[in-house]
Length: 399
Image (cartoon, rainbow, N blue to C red; front, side):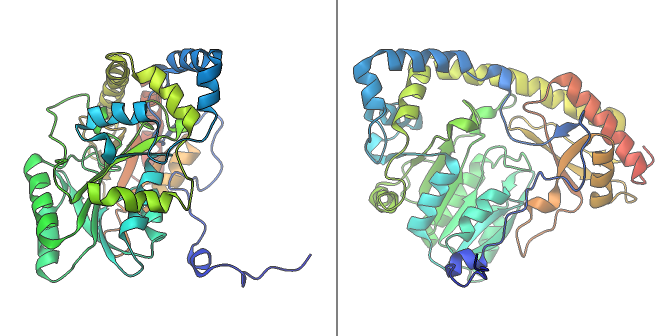
């Protein structure tokens, strides 16, 4: 077999390195480990029974079963598109169903960005979103995310200095990893800036429906031709379904479909039909969201309370009003992130290091850790914090 030196790869494939897992471990993890990681919704509230019934009903009807196994249109099934459009409050012609939220982001960025373009991003950022942006060859310009979401004033300063992004990418509700929510006034201002300077706001909002406390903030308006809303069922019906959607300004629909015509052609006909059977009954989807919110609320409260009880003075952590994570900060100057992560693994727990969410040219976030709670029972969360406290002591914090 001839040795392969990579000379036959495209320039794109050659410049991409193998992605490092932002939840990966640095060593061996105990078998009984309780990991404060991933972004799965609470498994107990996922609609497995309803999905099972929907699939059985679909396959029991020969005509519907045959239709669900055939090719379909590039924007999605008409009935499914209509259901999504009603929830978004827009014309169905502006909806494009995708194979997940990341696929939606990939389609729209390919339609908007060229190599060398600038795109403003959240800092910190969900690292897989950054990888999707890298496929376009665009240059990420980090703007800090604080307690109130993307720092729109910092963006204004960049614009005043002459930076001209083609797009601004942000997660406005319960941002991953910080849990921050962009305020209504900041959203309005961001759209005003987009319309003035000609960039597109890419609002990637998988956690918008995950609020369990506090007052809702109105979403970005759908009447601006500078706003794209990206969403997914990953945080409500389960990430294994790989189904999302785009709510696009009219001028961007056909360019996105032109990209799709050269990639996957259309979303899964079968998955759309099966999910439609779950969400179409009046109030069904909202009941699923309510069940998830109740579990997530309890778990977020348990984790935040345990952290305050066992790690006060060492780690600062506030319970968010939604989302799946707590963005905790190291207070103890004797603690460093990497030694603490090693110690946590040894004591049978794990967390995502803040450095994994950094944007090149931005902050390194080496005093932060992301702690997931959404799919972990309350008793396990308490045990994980007990183990984290032991790790803090081992790493030099004296907890």
